[in-house]
Amino acid sequence: MTPMPEREFATVSRGLDRTSPPMRLFEKAKRLGIWNPTDIDFTRDRLDWDGLKVDEKDVILRLTALFQAGEEAVTLDLLPLIMTIAREGRIEEEMYLTTFLWEEAKHTDFFRRFLDEVAHVEGSLTHYHTANYRTIFHDALPVALGALLDDPSPAAQVRASVTYNMIVEGVLAETGYHAYHSMLSRNSLMPGQTQGIAYLKQDESRHIAYGIYLISRLIAEDDSLWTVAETTMNTLLMPALGIIEEVFALYDPVPFGLLLDEFTAYATMQFQKRYLRLIQARGANLAQVQLLTQAAIDADDA
Image 1 (cartoon, rainbow, N blue to C red):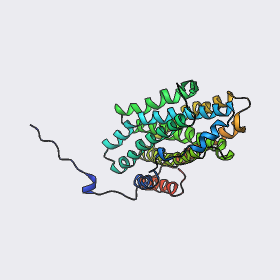
Image 2: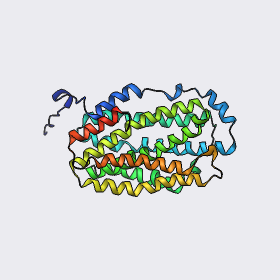
Image 3: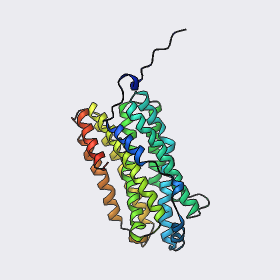
Image 4: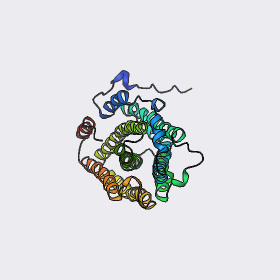
């Protein structure tokens, strides 16, 4: 019987690089990510919900249905990325990525609690999922992340992270948080939901920071991957913006005084600032990528 090769464990040979961006993010996740959806008090939210108009309830339900399925989707689809990083022996990155799955699962739990305990939803909400939504969450996201099972190449990693971190989190989720703020916080409504959204936003900012770091690291190592990143971004940005436009097209007037131009501008701004961050990775070395990422982490600006 051929003996198994001796395994090398990083933590007993070289130790952990606690200054690396993934480990800094891991520290933040341990400190800030320990919140329980079950602890959120929806008492006032139920009273506020009962006082809303029909169209106001509908637009909140629509947004929540998009988030609910989206959070479940990333919980289901994320494992291949974690497996890919683990197989490369990047222990610091894998340690941080363990928090992704935990947090996405909590987000799934949080939105379902709102639907069950505040909106009292029974039956399917899939009628809120538009064509552009299906393009991203039924097609692009599972395909890009699932592809890593057979093709863990740097190019496949870039496609997966751009889809997940740049588009799903960086454009759609962040624009959705802005919508919740505009509907709820500005009108002093639903403090429980508002609190939960604040926790989600904080979690997702760490996810985006890692995604930008991963894509930047890969581009710094191989500049030809910039074309992969740019092509994926350009392919998915329009359906992402299309999701926003489809929502606004369904209401006249739009509840809560929401304005399409405000939200398309916000989504584009979120995309553009990450796009510029990735451009900085071209021609950079790993140390420079780490410094750029660390500056964003310290500034809480993923």
